[in-house]
Length: 572
Figure 1: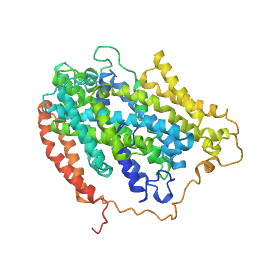
Figure 2: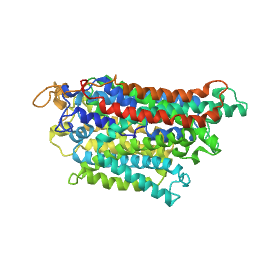
Figure 3: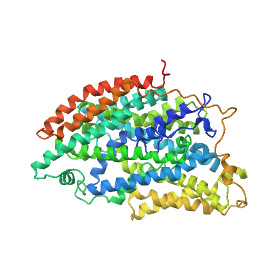
Figure 4: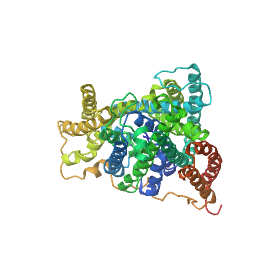
């Protein structure tokens, strides 16, 4: 997941909402008018840049440690990411485009304030844990330049590490409180470089692996990766997870966003529901390329260090392959996930405690999040932790999907609770509980892998909710347009005026843009140089770590200047 976060709409998306909204607000309780809907170019770029973050370091290495085989990994990620894209395009996007509402407003209208409060508390907790895990990831990069040992237990093994985490956490909280616009711009600059560094790490790692394979008599790439990377067995020799478990994980890693409906909050700006297909850019760049390259990088680093991958943290892995730029990549990747996650955790909790300001709630949440980050179990057990959260949140998305897709087919209007003036939606509470209970029972029974539990949980709630609604009296109605009655017209007008929002031209032909792109191409070229015959791959790795410093520095200067100038009028 990406970005971010598992469940988590990224900071670039929040920046888009701000840019697309009126000066008076962000349409939190207004449907998006035609004049403020966005074209497909925005969503393509947003998804492409969103899913390369700190979680990719952790997930890519974890898949190696879980003992998946090479063919199972490649096919599993192909299938699972396809299912994720279809979930965005067929489930989340149609609801978002027809309703034009945030998930928070939709839930409040569907089930009442008590239901939405529980959801906000759970969402805030998830965001806080994600932020804490990524603070730990950033701290692992700073750890490399100290004498602090890698932290691979569930508890901190060094007081110095705790002090380091508190320092990194304080910076994270300060940057979050500083303002979200600055953070969104920071991510806009960093995302292309992050994707390039992931790809470069895989490109430069393969010749090193081939060289080590030749020492053991392995001459083919498939033989090398099957032996050193995705072996099909865990470090203790037990069989690894199957292709279907990998597919389920790739599908469910971002479930809170697609089948969990969190991305309604951004896709409500889309002109067409087909824009959900643009999520493929994020899935196959971030959750295919980045996970594969992170696995190659982790396995290569472990071989060079003569250690088990499970005994290395993201900072140690990235430093061994990418040098000082690898440490910067880990820090940036951690921050581009932890900061927006902390921001969204503060928003979720502030919705529960509206008497307190966002700044105060976010600061308190940041303190708690930093304390969580002191315990490395959050990222060492990241896949398991995220899977439990996904199981808890999956029923909410299923209830929204059933409200939109199934109830009208049963002649029941969406938002029937609001129409009848009821304080709560009992079927929604019951369907949520039934779904979670089904997951817990299957978890205890042990027949399904933890990574696959979200599937029966989501389906159970999706079926249970409309069936429970049938027991309510006075529900069935005939001869009405259910969607128009619930949501209003398909293309709402702006309040007071439908004047199109002014969008200043984007300066794509700015020379700084081409300079920044050229720097990324140079970095990839340097990584690929080791593929030439006669080049000592291991020796080239040390040279590569030094050579990429200059193009990286030039990139950040050029990209920052371009980012600041990109929306200036062309006459300036």
